Each structure stands twice: as C-alpha cells, then as structure tokens.
Image (tube, rainbow over all chains, first blue to last red; front, top):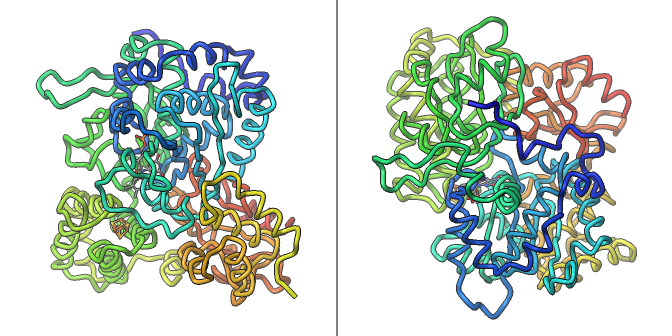
Length: 444
Length: 157
Ligand SMILES: Cc1cc2nc3c(=O)[nH]c(=O)nc-3n(C[C@H](O)[C@H](O)[C@H](O)COP(=O)(O)O)c2cc1C
Ligand code: SF4
C-alpha cells in the first residue's frame, strides 16, 4: 500500500500556516464560490454518500444528521461547532484550530450552506487560548476579505461566525449541554427527543458538529466522495447496519510512550501499530499493560486486545464502549490499574453535572470506594459493588439523561473484568501504595 | 456608585448583536467582568443582570455552575496557574510536579501565594497530552513540565 499522505494535517508545519494568505496559496477557498453556488441538498448528498461519520465521539453519520432538519423551515437554523474538546487524552481539535483555522472555517461555510444556516456559533473551551486567538484572527481576515458577512463572493449567501468561550466544564461538550451553556444557562444536558435538529439552540433547528468532522467536510467537497471512500474501512458485509469507517482520522497517542503525538492515518490502524510505529513504543523499555482506545470513557484494551482495529466498529468488539475520540492512552506494566481507574472515576465525578441521581451519586460513590481501596482498607466485595453501581448508570441501562454516565461506568466495567488481578492483589495486601503526591490529589 | 465601569458595560453591550437574546451574553459578560476585576462580586452580578434583563439569581445560577468564576470571597492572585491532574499527565508525573510546586511556594491547590502573584489550582485534561505533564498559566498552555521548568515559569510571572 502506498504511504498515506496527511490531508487534515497537510499544512500544520508550514510557516505562517494560520494566515489567509498562506491558506489561499495552498488552494484554500479556491472553489468556495462554486460550492456555495451548488444546491444545498447536493452538498448534503455528497457528504452523506461519502460516508463521513462524526469525529466527536458518537460516530453518527454526518450527512444523514443534516437531513433530519425540517424541510423548508421558515426561521433561522443554527450550526454549533463543538470545540469543547475535553475528553481526557484528546487534543486533535486544538491542533487543527491553532495551526490551520481556515481549513475549519471553510468547512463551517460549506456546512452552513448545506443546512441553510446563516449563523454559526463556535463553542470553544476556555483553556484553548491559543486556538481562540488563531480563530479570532482568521475570522477577522475572512470578514475583511468578503469570505464572511453578507453576500459572500457575490453568491448571495450570508454567514456570521461567533466565537463563544466556555468556562471549564467537560459537560459542555455534550451537544445539548453545549446548547444550554451557549444560551447562558448551566450546562445541563436536555432530555432527547426532541433532538437538536428539530429543536436546538434558541429552540430552533440546530446541527452540532465536531471540529474534525467539519475539517473533513472541506476535503470531501474538494476531492470527492470517491477519494474519501478510498481511505479507511468499508462496511462489514456481515453486518447490514455497519456504515463503515471511511476517511482519515487524527489519532492522539499519550501516556507511557516514547513520543506522544497526534498522527493522521486512515481509520482502522491497530492500537499496537500506533504505539509501536508512530509513538516510538512504550517508554523505558517496558511493556504496555492497558491501552485506552478512545478517551477514558471508552474503557480499556488489555494485552491480548492490542491488535484491535481502531475504526468505529473495532473497540466495541472487545467490550469497549466505542471508538470515542480515538485518543489512545498507554499504561505501562509498572502502573497499578487501581490508580488509573481512580483517576478516571475522580474525573467523571468532578464533571458530572449532577442532574441525574444515578450519575451524580454513582460517580461519587465509585470514587469513594476506590479511595477506600487505595488507602488499604478495600474489601474484595468492593469489586462487585463497583460493578453493580457501574451497571446501573447511563443511557444504556436507561437511567440518565446523557452519555457522560455511560462513559463513567465503562472504564470501571472494563478495568474490573479485564484487570481483576490488579485490584485483588492491592486489596489483599491491605496496604496503601499511595505516594504523598497522590494523597495531595485526593484531599482536594 | 456602580461596580462596573461604563467601559466594561459597553464591552458587554457590544455582544448583544451576536445573539438573538440577551441571556446568551451571560458567559461573555462574566468573562469580561472576571478578566477586568479578578472576581465577580454580588454587586457585579446585580449589574450584569440589569444589563441582560435577567434576575440576579439567574446570572448567579449560571455563574455558580462553572467553578472558573470566583466571587468576592475567593480573591485570585494576579495569575492563575492550573496543573493538570487527568490521566495522561498523571501517568507522566503531573502529581509530582504539583506536589513540588506546592512545597516550593508553600501553598495548597486553591490557595494564593503570599505575594498575591499566583493562585494555584487543579485542572482536568487541558488537551495538550502530547506535552504531558502540562500546566495552564491564565489561558496559555505550557508543555513538558518538570519541577525546574514550572518553578522557573512561576518565578518569572
Ligand atoms: C459527556 C460528553 C462529552 C462530549 N464532549 C464532546 C466534545 O468535547 N467535543 C465533541 O465534538 N463532541 C463531544 N461529545 C459528543 C457530542 O454530544 C456530539 O455527539 C458531537 O459533538 C456531534 O458532532 P459530530 O457528529 O461531528 O461528531 C460529547 C458527548 C458526551 C456525552
Ligand atoms: S448523565 Fe450525568 S452528566 Fe449527563 S445529564 Fe445526567 S447527571 Fe448530568
């Protein structure tokens, strides 16, 4: 197979990659006028036929979501760009925004034309200051060049992009939490249905898309759906419900590797290949004990599962929640899964919005039980208790409003079923191996 | 006398045309006030509410959801330093970096240094895991930190 050439990341190492001038010198916006002159439904169909699936975590087919908008809706339709990227281990959206903001803006323009929207709100997590400044400058350049605003390039199409900064809350990444936050309220996810496409931001039809998804849209329109489908994994012929995993993907690799990185590859690379060939292998000459396949919400792979393909279907086949954000975190064989799981649970407990009792209480109690284990007072029954709590919370058992809860339960289920030995050994030793630094984390 | 200057009020009003209603300006307004005053006091909440045609409790309700905003009971130092404690940083020594910073400056997370320069806080994943452990100073991220580089960075603030 020919070596894969990055597309989304093609420009990130160029000098001055963020400027309009350099983006245009590389062919950016060259065809925007033609695209904005196409019928919106035709643009949607190209994206739909390309088989683009959302990169924000759920993998929902992008073009299909756009068709859920009501036809001939008289009032405004909104696009929300989800740039709240907060799933632990994930940082690809940040690089896209910091290094190539115009690629994203062009994708936003195309998406807004397809869904007949004239206003886009980009919800950016507060911590991404550099992204904010790059985007703010890029948006200003576009207004000055007639690429945003009224009657863009004489096509009659109007578009405004508003940058909206968050204030440090993971739940603002959940699409209806994002909408509530944008509306000036606490970011409490909404009960669905109605889905945002029917009633979303300001109670109007709304599409929420991830930054990387929209960057893919730009390239699909320029290079065609056949190009997109020449990359990645086609649908499984034995599973009529599998839409396949087409296109390039930005894989983030971090944790115990020699060269943590974000690398663009065709969907379907295995976890082992990512670690060995792209991240310089496991650090300090050690072996990997566990690998997070797609952000901590997705759970863990154990040694015998490292050859799992990281496409949309792969992680689910070995008991993980899904591909998630394709953020790979490597844990070496000198690390206790007790500490790793505690970190995941503490995060989820901190970030639960507190609306649903099973999530608020479940995440808090799982953290408390793991604390008890860590201080050397755990009981073997605690492991069954953890499993019981984890099984009772989330959209899957039907007890909560949003998927944060499933993402809190999954690492617990995977860790205890795949690494039970680690937990039993820790509990049976009746000792605490916590360092003073870990205790500091715990107290506060 | 009011808490918010006329200039600050105008900066808040500048956001009105961007949204179909004024309530959506709550977060931008809180950011503007917080940036300028290093806190959002009860008096400021009342004035923001007046500008946005909301009840002060509605502004407070939103504000209190986000730990980011501090009221007058939690005065911040000149700079906020957040140390990431999520998984990728934890695996690469984030906890140790934090501990040694605490020891060096004799403060705990949540506290402000005696000279009022720095408030030290925890962060959840900062989205810079290729450079773990990492810290955020105000809204600039610094990667590949160790005890020496964090200390040097903080001393320069
Ligand atoms: C707890 C939670 C957090 C989420 N965080 C993000 C996020 O930070 N960024 C993102 O794009 N999607 C996030 N999502 C997924 C969004 O709800 C939504 O599916 C996505 O933005 C849709 O865009 P896409 O179809 O382009 O992927 C999150 C979902 C949940 C349940
Ligand atoms: S599942 Fe958790 S985070 Fe989601 S709405 Fe319920 S309480 Fe909030």
